[in-house]
Length: 279
Image (tube, rainbow, N blue to C red; front, side, top):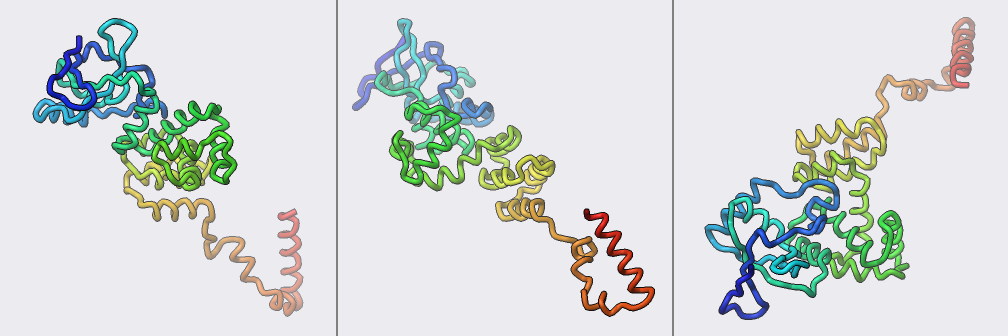
């Protein structure tokens, strides 16, 4: 059942019962598309308490369902979940049958900066694949081509409509999020580390240090510069002063030529042994 609110100017705002509002499966970018949950119970309780004490500041968006009196949520799932958590019976809603469900949910979250970088990236890619009629697997290469000016699918214009104005920068940095492990994505989603800091780990590829370095970074709260330095140390380890390469560099050819007698014979024997080991 829906009651129209009198005295409201502009778009129609109605009161809907919570049990009449249904959430479309996978309809919210928050956590769903990237495969992890995105609704923290503590923040939902705080939001619900605020709505109960101070009123609902903005209506949820809904469209009519197939059954009489049924509404499908278009945008505002946090408000709906918070209201249900606190046992509220109704919410203010704005019927918008003209809106595209996926695009509206994405744009609302982006405009409110309600998504973490992982969920935002996955949501944009899924919506972009849908609207550009591209396969998700082929989308990254199409985006890189679009950043170079080769854009038959209109990717640049679609990204601008999502609020992304620098396609080249977004493509260069955000596509690395696809290479994060589940544990790394979770660290970003939980706010344990900034996404740029975590993405540095992708430079390690399949190296075994990647997992332990993430745990240390979360515990110590690495900055981006610290993470980059630690990753560089794994990729380009500093030769220890007594390492083989350093020892070889310390040998002077002139000193070898100056050897005589037993010392020269011993040096030649050792060099032949070394040569044999390196073959």
